[in-house]
Image 1 (cartoon, one colour):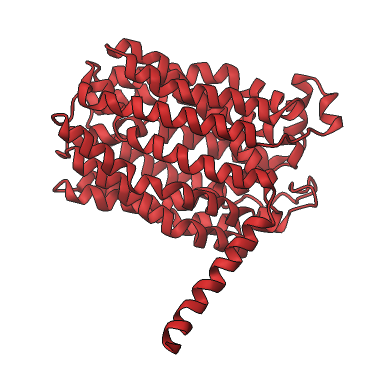
Image 2 (cartoon, rainbow, N blue to C red):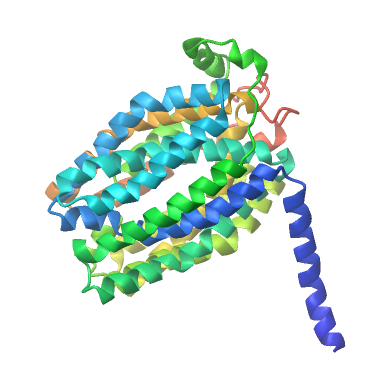
Length: 430
């Protein structure tokens, strides 16, 4: 009995610390945790099948890239206004707009009967990236204490990833039971996703508390507000360059990963489900430890330390001699996902709290511009050179250009002010 007591004591202590961590954050953080769990299960049902669904409805890889480009084009015009409105008027209202888009997206996917009709849900999917996800990051950053921020993002990611270990397998079983990979077998997944998303979004909106904007921000015009964010902050311009390059290389590959797995490597629905579950399992296990590491040694060091796993993942995807190796490839990608919480913390901490909406809008505006040609270029490289070329290009650009630029950025963990932003006086490195 004493051995059992000794074994349960550390677990009880860990649970107590976890409870204390949750309770010392703002109530919005707990609401976002619950919504994140429900939303992740909903998205996990369909995330591996969207590109395959487009192809099954008759599109080729170039047309698939074109659909994603249309979504990025729309984002170019809405990203900056959404960020400005969130800072000036209401984060909660901006979040509501994103929630509505997120709910409608799977419904329009389910109702489509040709690939051309998918332009609507793909545009909605792209728009959620600059509304729901951006505002959610700002709300999360605001609801966490400065020294808990990377860990808090890690907690959110960990709990959100637990359902995604299950939902891809559930989706794979449903698709297989309905006859294997086809548009009609995939369609019910979107209906299920719609119902879950509707219920979770309605609950979250009514539970969230408003975050009041700064009085000085209310008086700023649209253009002057964005100029103020960038003025005198050399590090923001470098970060934008890192974001732009990342938007291009990931935009030219992400629409094609599952198509590559199915058409080139021979994956079936069960393999796709296991790939998604492997990614979620690794990210669930490591999100909190990596968040704690980011809060201890710094955001930048943690990002750079984990980067080689991304390259190994894509190299394994290209090399995989059998579909089973794709599962290992996605497991390695889980380390990148685990470090996303550290990336988001650093991204938000580059500016003071009251400017984070506009900063997110600025990032998404420029990212959307780059993402317009990226999927089309990826499709052209797939069709006219080799399907593996976009993935190899990602490794080269990220390792030889993006990460060296990131290494010159200031470490935000050491530069936090009371308002949660980096000091304008940060010395520019030689």
